[in-house]
Image 1: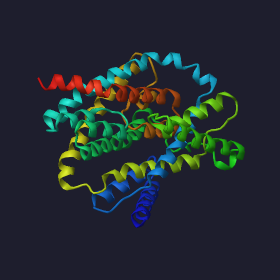
Image 2 (image 1 turned 135 degrees about the vertical axis):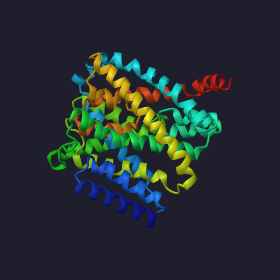
Image 3 (image 1 turned 120 degrees about the vertical axis):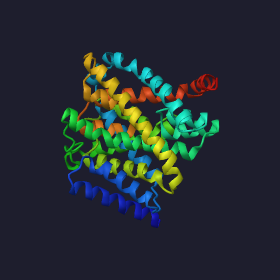
Image 4 (image 1 turned 180 degrees about the vertical axis):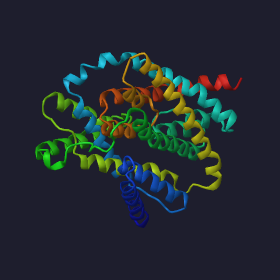
Length: 342
């Protein structure tokens, strides 16, 4: 209990410092930075997983509430960029596996599952079954998510002059109580049902599906309030930062350094895809960056909400990326192993 309270205090201090320094996304980047620093200094850090998962449902509701008939009618126009998602996943694999295996010295299972930009928990489960180093996978994927999420706000501001200071929603006092209750119901029911049927990303996709159905039926007219989305950011930030708890100097030297190097590769590759898509006039640059950046689904959803981007466009691409990685992981791992063991 003491470590949980100290974690919340550190995360709160991070929020306050980011507000004081007028840095972007204080409710997300503040807890990530503060918890990371505290973990690296050896401070015991601990979140509350059920609460972290519950907060992610808010993002699912936020996305589902945007899926109106007008928004759904835009989905057919997304096919050119959706077709590029598997191409980018393949590029990441072809560059990342040899990077981790031949340059960083990891065994094949660890190299492969460290490379694949799928859900962190899914890649750890698959990797453990394949004999990978689970601790290394956790640190590398946490670093991928952290660096991508930390770098994107500055890219959005520097290149697209995005305003990330706007509230992510209306205040709770302006939303009818009946709609707030319906949102909470969609979050709980969607999450639990999705978990029961084994849907990946259940805490986000379950609430998103139920909320979208209610929105399309005309029963919901608001997104979750700003206060709820700030709370979601806070707990997501804690979840990322606390993954570094107990990290040793040897892990910093090998796993963290390897993860940072891979992040540079991912950022360059993402910008190449974004520039190509934007130059061809297929999709706006800001939405393309958020859609193709291989960060976490929850974190990129937060950024899309705050930047005022087309949330449906962003989420559709991330869901497809995760589906491709999870569904194709066992087969692709087998093919990669045969190629790289020659």
